[in-house]
Image 1: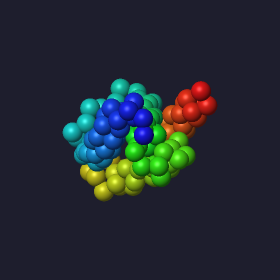
Image 2: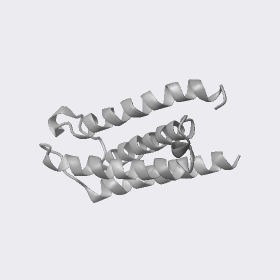
Image 3: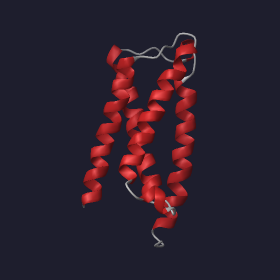
Image 4: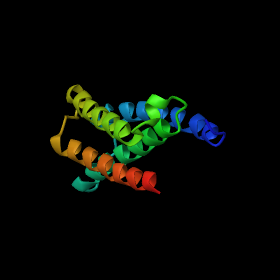
Length: 126
């Protein structure tokens, strides 16, 4: 492992784990505790951006990991984790007062992961 990977590893893993936990709590808050969206599309933008950021953090955590099993194909592993976690978050909302699992929210999650995935692929080729 090169020395340049150590600071990155020390930053990305804690940030990735903390962000994942934050997402869980944010996605499972009852509706009355959340600000009302101004536009219907605002909810989809939030879903897109939250999973976009999760995918980037997951990719960097895996890519800069000291464990070779995480490093190999880190883009696909990060995308798989992000999609599965996004699906879980949608599923977890089904029993939260005022919230529900939405196919279109999941599509926004998927698009956020795909956008970040393509950015990661481009960065790997450079």
